[in-house]
Image (cartoon, rainbow, N blue to C red):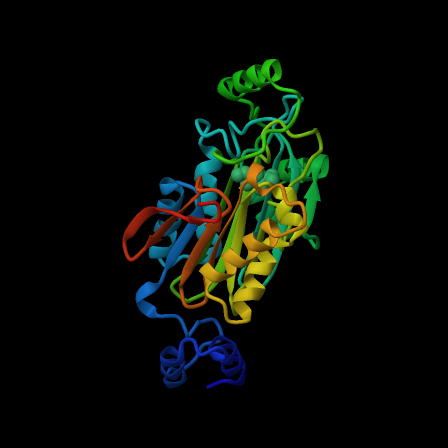
Length: 330
Ligand code: SD4
């Protein structure tokens, strides 16, 4: 067994996990690209925040055809971005308090490379622009006009993202509200997706229109690597949804992955990351939502949120299901 793989397996077995699969791994001829410690029966798999069966089905199609986890999460997120009926991400996303739809997205691959766009306007597929930032620039993040210009230079079309339905919702909110952004508990504005491909490699993506009716210029956790999303191909990946300010303050997705590195299951790691938010002095957690989903290198998954209004969609073993997540406030 190669030294690199020995170290990788040792980190998984350090707390007594995966002994059987480690032995199997040692018996295999290891390729640097293949994850020997993952149970073959469970691969590939894709999970996503919220009830997004069409998006996970698209990712699954890519994975089943032998595609990479990176292609799967990008193509999966694009389904929701293109869905103008959904008022969460991409086209049709709810605008900021001035009526402008501004998108944030990021993507991370098995090598630990990442790309991100913040405050992107007039371009539906923020996740694909984020991927281009990762692959075609020396940078990790482009913002605002620069991101938009970069998108046009790479063939993306200019589109009006504010649909009639979202405009109407915003106009109604203006009349009723105290001009505050809506704190997301029961609805969502984001899709986060994590996949493991047939080779055992992990990638993740996160795309959002951000908090509905946010202040102009506001950026949340979703495009911030380590907060909204983190992938470590040796350990696992995590992605967040909910009130981005709280996720950023605890660097939530990085925390979940680091807790898995220390031996916690994805479920226990998500729970601990939520506990960090809830247990902060004077935490106002009863009035906001945060949820995490996570996957480890073995293909085990977990999800946890503060409130019950959260679920995870999972496509694995030919089954595409939406699973109610466990939650903190019972
Ligand atoms: C944000 N985390 O911009 C996003 C919003 C979200 O479900 O996830 N809504 O803070």
